[in-house]
Amino acid sequence: MRNLPILMSGVLLGLFGILGAALVGVSYEGTAEQIAHNEREALLQQLEVLVPGKSIDNDILNDVVQISAPETLGAESTQVHLARLGDKPVAAVFSPVVMQGYSGPIRLIVAVRYDGTVSGVRVLSHRETPGLGDKIEIERTDWITGFDGKSLLDTAAEQWRVKRDGGVFDQFTGATVTPRAVVKGVRETLAYFNEHKLQLFGLEQAAVEKSDE
Image 1 (cartoon, rainbow, N blue to C red):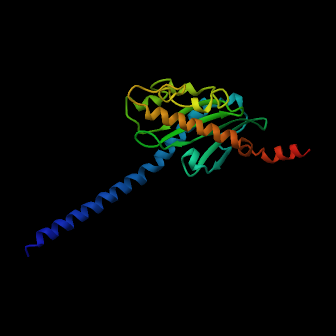
Image 2 (spheres, one colour; image 1 turned 120 degrees about the horizontal axis):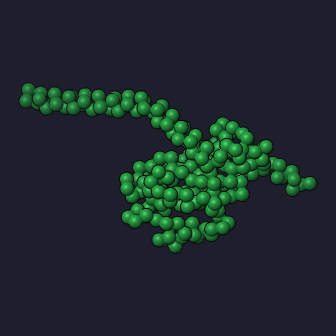
Image 3 (cartoon, rainbow, N blue to C red; image 1 turned 180 degrees about the vertical axis):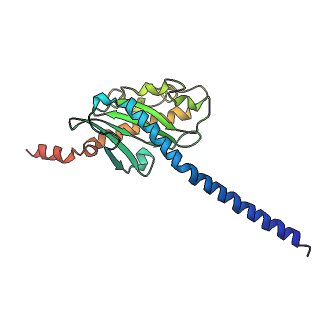
């Protein structure tokens, strides 16, 4: 009988634990669709900014290829939007995930022109420190625009680092990890594009046939 209060306490704690887990699950199910919708809207807005509609004539939102390059682009599967004008490639827009953020993964959108130069970079989501790491957001500072027009040809690979590491990109006072991670993510996206752009735009076979002529 002495053990009855302890047993009751254990049962109650177990019930509260189950109830808490159920509430978390219901909350997640209720917000997952809204989160996905918000991310899609944010992506749409950024696509329009980084690849102006007047420069293309295809449906960039639905002209998509799905690739798997987790070692380079972070996620197991990465979506790439393709921009074309008269069937000629204009740009590819990647959504890499940088895993080396200070407080967790950083989701980027990186637009690369067909000549290998950066059309623009934006941050879709992150959990970096407010007031420090969040300076990667265009709404906070213009730091992210420092990638515009750069490529792996005009900026040597060893310079694709923050200045503290001997590169050309600024870091933030008190927050080096975050910009360092973003620079690395953009650099690796460019490297992937340079290596696979024919394949991305379905031009690989055409290039082979042309070389055989």
